[in-house]
Image (cartoon, rainbow, N blue to C red; front, side, top):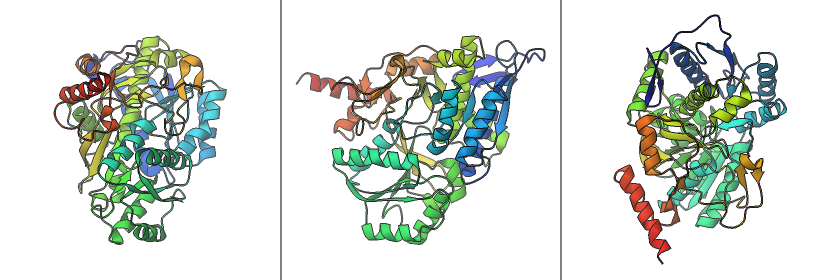
Length: 468
């Protein structure tokens, strides 16, 4: 038997029952409004742990034991359960949360006890905690590229629609600044409570406003009601497309592919990605949970976290939380989405950015992607141009001078991508030099052809400006 980690197969050993287990916490909502999204995250954590144990566990045969808690989509309960996992259960890491509200609720707990949360979902940025490993997208790895792409498709008039909590509100604050900088127009901005089910009034407002695009950060089961009522009102993707940042394949199972067909979503991973690593990942997931189950971005992102955590434990030779955090920095491997790297400066991953078009079968057709993983930037240049997350300097730096920040679209080099794909090696942080200069004004410069040819065109185009 072998354990699947990226491009490497690790020969299985045996669990040694005489050795103490390594305990980890699993903190995802199994009930309430967020269960539609979080149950599957819990599932993939348990799958990844079973894969690790099937290969003989960690640290010479120690079994990894998950302790699962249900915070029930209630933010204070998240904090209570996190404290229990840390103090009573003595876990060495916690894999958990979805919404930014839940993450913000537990953050003081993890910081007070100097512990470690592995967080899997895209978020609004504006955060820099040494007690969190973030495997979801930062704004420059999701919303920023999506806004620019839409503008280049001629979609200038934006209707911003989100659930009423920190992620949508902060995300839309950044989007509004980006629209102002890049020539877009804000038509309207609207929020509904989590769990909201009546969208007739909102749909009528959309009809009256006649935007070019709806940019949606609605979360949870409210998406089912919104898309069904949008379609019932006669608004199609051809009329007014929706770009979503919080629904993926798992949510589409509840919404119905026929209700979202033609609309868009932006993520770092899609189930339809055609590569051997992803095919194996999907096959393993469906063999365990059923052929009708789907994988999606947050599912894959938490899988990345668990496997990176396991690598860090082995690298550290210890299950001490501080040793794990230190060892995790700079780990890179070939994940189902492609090469990823945990940036030691800000504890976020380098990740490819992809835009997918919803198909009726619930899958996505990838219509655009960056030529490689993008360096994470937790602080947006549109709202905080002098800020940067730098754990080497103690956290958030607020006094960057012009030019110090670097590009928001720095791409991992082709050489690094090839090396990771070929060997799956784990190394420290490696400087990347290619810039995603497509966002500087050439809409087709990064589209079409092989990865190598796309990045080569980008670099040539960038160098042409240096000679002027």
